[in-house]
Image (cartoon, rainbow, N blue to C red; front, side, top):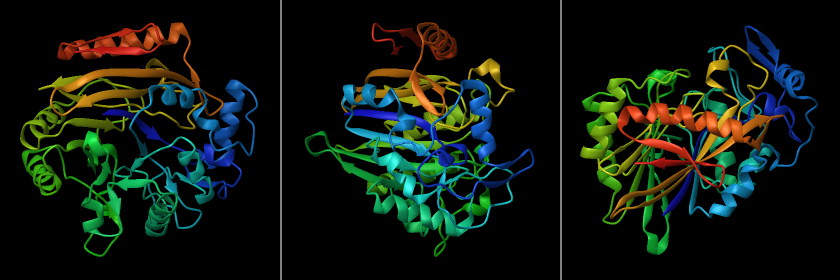
Length: 363
C-alpha cells in the first residue's frame, strides 16, 4: 500500500480570502483584525497574490509530484473549520474557510481529513457541524471528530480490495492546544481527545483499535500532539508511540502539530512520524521563527505492507510562496535533508537527498 501523508493543511484565514468565495475577513486576534492582513504580509514578502484562484492553486507543484507517485490513499490533517457561520472561540486565533472552497481539497484528491486537532472547533459547535456536513457532501471521509461520541471514535475505513483495509484512527492531545472542552459527548459534536500520553491512553487506543481490526487490516494512528516549535521529542511521547505499536499493533503513526518537520523513527518495522510539519498555511511574511525555515515543507510518501512493515519512505520538499507550494531549490532541499538527518540520527536513522530532488529515509 502506498500512502501520501502530510501535516497541517490550514486553508482558512488569509488563504480563504484569495479563493472565489470567502468568509467575512474580520478576525479576533490581538495583533490582527482582518484576515486580509495576512494576505498583505505575504504580498510584502513575495509580491502580488492572485485573487479568486482556482481550487488547485494552493497545491502548486505538489499535485504533479503526488500524481506521479500514484498513492493509493491521501491523508491530511485539516486544521481549519469549514464554515461561514458560528462564533469565534475565545482562544486568540480562529481559522475558517468558506464551505464553497472545499473544492480545494477535492482538487487534490484527498481521501481522508483528520479533524482531531486544535482548530477544527474554532467557530463553535455550529462551525464544527458545518465542517462535518461540508466534507460529507464533498465525499471526503473524516476521522477524529463527529456528531457524537460514537461517530467521533469510529475510524475511517478505506477498503483497498486485494491490498486490504486501511483503518485511520485520530486523536488530539492537550499538548497541541486542543481544549478539553471540545471533547465529544454522548449527544454532542466534538473532537476525539486523549488526556495525555500515559499508559491509560495507550490502553484506550489499543481497545478501540482491537474493536475494529480484522486480520489483514493496516492501522494508521494520527495524533495531533506536542508544541508548534522545536525539535525535541518528549520522552512521554516516544514511550507512547512505542507502546501503541507494541500493545495496539499500530502500523503507522502519523504525528502533527509542529509547524516544521521533526524526527522520524522506525520501531519494530513501523514508522513513527513524530511531526510532519505544516504543509499549507498563511504564515508567509510572519517573522520570529526563521531558524526553523517554516516556509520549507514536506509531504511524505510511504510504501508499507503488513507482512514486512515499512518498505520505503520518500519526503517531497516544497517552499510556500504566494500561498502556493513550489518545488524547493537544490539549496533548500539540502538544508531540509541535513536538518532531518541530524534529528533522525538520534534514533539511528539517516536521511539523504535522492536523484529526484526529494529526501529518502534510510532505516
